[in-house]
Every structure is written in structure tokens, then in C-alpha cells.
Image 1 (spheres, rainbow, N blue to C red):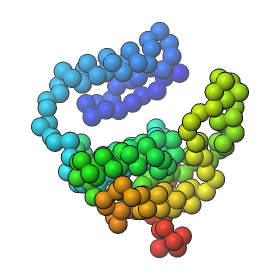
Image 2 (image 1 turned 180 degrees about the horizontal axis):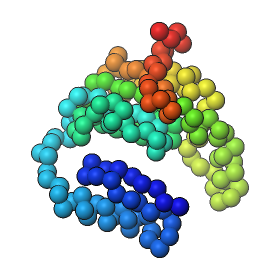
Image 3 (image 1 turned 90 degrees about the vertical axis):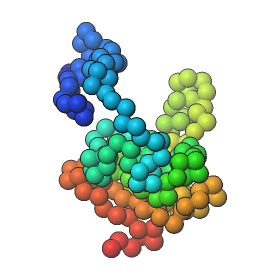
Image 4 (image 1 turned 90 degrees about the horizontal axis):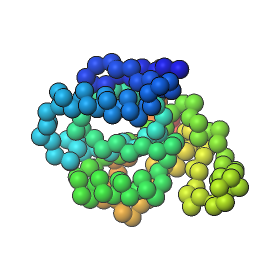
Length: 187
């Protein structure tokens, strides 16, 4: 099976399987990228003072979908885009040390976290002999999970800026964002 990936330097095939390991191909692509790379002279502080928390799903090209460029935002991704303790840790560092003020939360349609259950942890424990210390954070209702994530950010005592927090569901078929309002009343 072969897939193609695009980078800012142009399309490059990244083979999956076959004779070359995918990581070797990624390292080769990086070598080509580095040949033309010039230090953009940017600070670690995001230009737009925004942090985006989103699902790790490979179908989400956040920079293109949001009209962002390198240096515009901090991007924090995990399975489901849920606000976990580690996301709060990253947001706290983003705000307190690097000046972000706004938080955008993005879940998406067709998320795999809607099909996983907490039984996943039990199955792992049975397989490896140790129960994971982390929660799966699976959900059945993507809109409700966005609301929960908004609430977790807004009520965190560690964040300096919890007033400009908005949540969305990205439609993987249309590329459109649908805003989710905390009270459940869609505009």
C-alpha cells in the first residue's frame, strides 16, 4: 500500500510497507526539506496568541483549515482532541510562559474515539499485565464532548485566560467548522 503526503516544499511520496521503512522515508524527506530550509527568525511565542487543541486524526490539516501559517499558533493534539490534564499542562505553559490568550478546541466528525470504550484499558491490562494510568476519554456525542472540553478549560485554575475559549466540530467531508456553544444552544 502506498500513500502520498504533501509538504510545504512540494508533494513527496511516503511509502508505507515495502522495502523502505516509513521512518526512513520521513528522515529522507527531512533531509530534502533541510537543504532548502532557512531559519525564519521566529520567536516561540505564537504571533496570533492562540492555542489550538485538536484531534490527532490525519485528515485534519489544521493550518490550512484555519488559514494559519508557521508561527501563528501553538498546536496541541491528542486522540479525540479532548482536554486532559496534559492538555491543561500545555495550555498553562502556552499562556503563562509564551503569551497565548485564546483557545480553540476542535473535534471532528467520524472520530475513532466515538467507537472506543473504557474497556480498551481493561483489554490492555489483560494483554500486558498492567493497567494504563490514563483514561481513554472516549465519547459517544462529539458535541457534548466539545462542551465538556470547553468547561474544563474555562474552569482550570492554572489558566490565566479562560474567557476566549471556543469549540468546534470539523466536518471531515466538507472541511467546515460548526461551532459548539457551551450551553448547548447552537446559533
